[in-house]
Amino acid sequence: MQNRIMITGAGSGLGREIALRWARDGWQLAMSDVNDAGLQETLKLVREAGGEGFVQRCDVRDYSQLTAFAQACEQKLGGIDIIVNNAGVASGGFFDELSLEDWDWQIAINLMGVVKGCKAFLPLLEKSKGKIINIASMAALMQGPAMSNYNVAKAGVVALSESLLVELRQQEIGVHVVCPSFFQTNLLDSFRGPTPAMKAQVGKLLESSPISASDIAEYIHDQVARGEFMILPHEQGRMAWQLKQKNPQMLYDEMANMADKMRAKAKSGKD
Image (cartoon, rainbow, N blue to C red; front, side, top):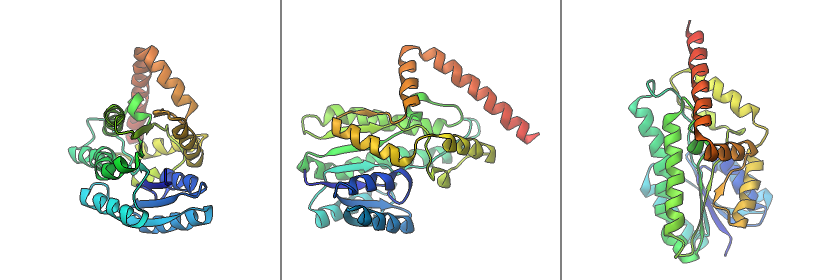
């Protein structure tokens, strides 16, 4: 492996921390985002950490921008060994409140952005016998209330990753999917939801997380090296996933109770 990694959504948060973790191993990095200022800052930090590379603005909704990014990787780095489909946006709201535009926006970025990233970079990965790391979410496995469009998009990323795992084994391409719980990040900058109260509740969850984006990047680095497919960085997330596999009904009941409380809270906020 020649140590070349591509990361989408590298301008901040988890994407930046993944870049820095691999930079510390001296990798060459290709980083993209829609946030130019964030990308420049990440590049500066990457160089300080011992990595090298380039940045390119890329909106993952646009397949032509992703194929152009792949071409740039081939021209500047001679190929790519790992791709990290990390770009994503947050969203919330009960199903009856979410518009179809909310659904389209969520699926276009969080699911189709990953599909397009895999598609655009697959020819390079076939040459390098590389790895795919898709960033999903515990929401893909737990389906918490008041975020159905986010849950569905992220569950799609898990299903895509499982499909690629079995389809690409013969080509010797490794596949990993990461399902972080909430963690301290600026994901809320992109948050779309029908009520300010919903954003505040998600904000509280993010703040209460004991694990940082940097910790998660370290865990991903470790688990990818071990060849682990399903990467669950949070201990609580691992426990919840075990519970769901053993007793799904108990989890559904818990989620339904949570939904009732959230509705009551939202209602009292409106009164």
